[in-house]
Image (tube, rainbow, N blue to C red; front, side, top):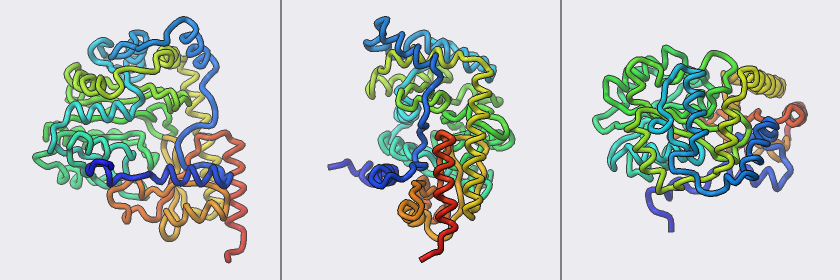
Amino acid sequence: MTATRLAAFGTTIFTEMSALAQRTGAINLGQGFPDYDAPAEVLESAIAAMRTGHNQYAPLPGVPPLRQAIAEHQRRFYGIELDPDTQVQVTMGATEALTAAIIGICEPGDEVLAFDPYYDSYAPAAAMAGAAFSTVPLHPPDWRFDPDELAAAVTPRTRMLLLNTPHNPTGRVFGRAELEAVAAVCRERDLIAVTDEVYEHLVFDGEHVPLATLPGMAERTVTISSIGKTFSVTGWKTGWATGPAELVAAVRAAKQFLTFAGGTPFQYASAAALRLGDDWYAAFSADLARKRDHLCAALEKAGLNVLVPQGTYFANVEVEGDGADWCRALVPRAGVVAIPTSVFSTEPERLRPYVRFAFCKRLGVIDAAAARLTAAAAAPSG
């Protein structure tokens, strides 16, 4: 029997729609996982780590080469200086880092504030910490927030603000002015910021600005990212949390009783991946932008109103009627799986018309899905 605090979350629509894709042979553009591999040299690094004996428990903070590589990455791309021993914690993916941060920092009865829609692990993580979860809306079609609504959502119990940029599920990249507004609220109301930056290198329009680089934010921000999205190895589940030593220590205190440590050879390989050259990062982003453009063009050709994303793996469309019903009907009609954006919201009615598609697939798969969508749009109804 599931504990009351988690019973409300149930089985996700990801499980339902992925099972439907497998059962029907539909093309799965629902879940955000690539159907292509990491660079060969990154895969070879994992194999080499296994063959040279790196197959036992890693130390709780993570293997030293990866902690050093994460510190180098933050300096290289953002000018952030970190002590790899006290300010870097390796985790089993970004989801564990987020969960450990909430459990390690929040007291029962505290409030965790996030932008809505939000990645689906946030609310359950708050529930596991005994914290209340509240949200501030991102308003379609441009997915911006109202600074007054943000300020009004903070209460005396609010302890933490979760920020995800580039943003899943909308594909928005928060601009510097928006981030300044977030930072101002955090400073004025003495909030801890936890930033989910797993799509940091998947930016096509604009630039990724870590919240921790803004004035007064380095000392109150836990920055979270992972290897999975940038290097197409989501199954490696290698992530990290960085920030002030006292906040990283809180993450570590919780993490040690979640998984303690794992994925040792993948940690060594992740260190090698992070050190790939700037040309690789640029080429990867450009390739994903090309896939975005292929999918968005196909969705527009199929008669859908496309909200072109600035980053991430995902594009949203506006449909007529209920997005969940539309997604279920899309499988027999077109043989393509998508996800209703409303499942990422505490106010699903507000986001009923929106549907999310993933474009982190081979171009051939995207084009095959495009052909199915176009054919379905052209077919007579009834």
